[in-house]
Amino acid sequence: MTGLPQKAARPAALLGWALAGLAMAANATAASPPPPAPPAGAGAQVLAGAKLYQQQCAQCHGVMGRDASVFPRPIWGPGHDLAKFGNAKGLFDYVQLLMPFDDPAKIDDAAKTAIIAYMLVRNGNLKAEATVPTGGDQTAIK
Ligand code: HEC
Image (cartoon, rainbow, N blue to C red; front, side, top):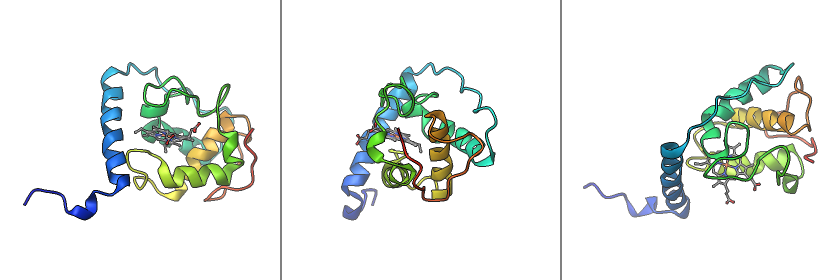
């Protein structure tokens, strides 16, 4: 038997399958610039988030959170649309549920929180040396 069990055909699995195709297309065409240096003065969590972002997110969102072929809209900095998440917790909840889009279970909550801390530093909402508690907090996103 080689077929997937019926139960595997959940919407999330189908979405992941569709996105995997997109990601492969992105990889095939991407001539990505090198990752930027981490933010000056970054603490351990933000440094970890910078690294994790490049490993888990940059292939679809670009090394600087923009100009990627899969999701071209910026996810921080000028033109971003993250204020809709309200604060760090709101952003965490979204990422916890949906990102990385190809497999949201690929990384744990601590890793996701570190990535969010990094994004908020890049977005100017958090100081580089600050930390965010696992699961996010009330740090406002502007
Ligand atoms: C396989 C490609 C892929 C990967 C990897 C990926 N994303 Fe995404 N991301 C997307 C797509 C596609 C959307 C749009 C989803 C939607 O609108 O339903 C999105 C949307 C988002 C948004 C919402 C942006 C907005 O303006 O609405 C955020 C924030 C985000 N991703 C963060 C991340 C983070 C953080 C990671 C790494 C942990 C990550 N993504 C990894 C493809 C990806």
